[in-house]
Length: 169
Image (cartoon, rainbow, N blue to C red; front, side, top):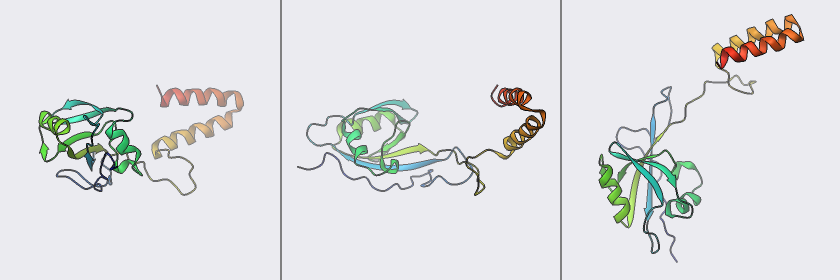
């Protein structure tokens, strides 16, 4: 028996999108291309979507449906359909949410282009650092810790509480 889906093409850039999330801009998106094939027994792709301009925003993926099965067979998120992805193209139809939806509902073979927001890139860490603390925050924490240590244990607890209040109002 054939698998109910085809292996997706590797992630490749689409017009206006980047293939990799690199650089300082947090608003970058990457393109992910996925190919699905509906076999007998699969009527829908098994995703909850809402219109988002000319695209479809993936709000959920149904357990054991076609997209869920596709995702289960993938080695990484780079070739999975994820909640929060925008379907910006289906079988060459783009900038038309209804047309994209029709392709997803009616076509047997669906080639999707997804736009996925890039995760924010953390700043660089010192080799000996255990966690990332932005430089400005690090200076505040270091100054508060030094003041608290000099004041003694009771005042250190008060200083820590004031620091937490200042950082997380």
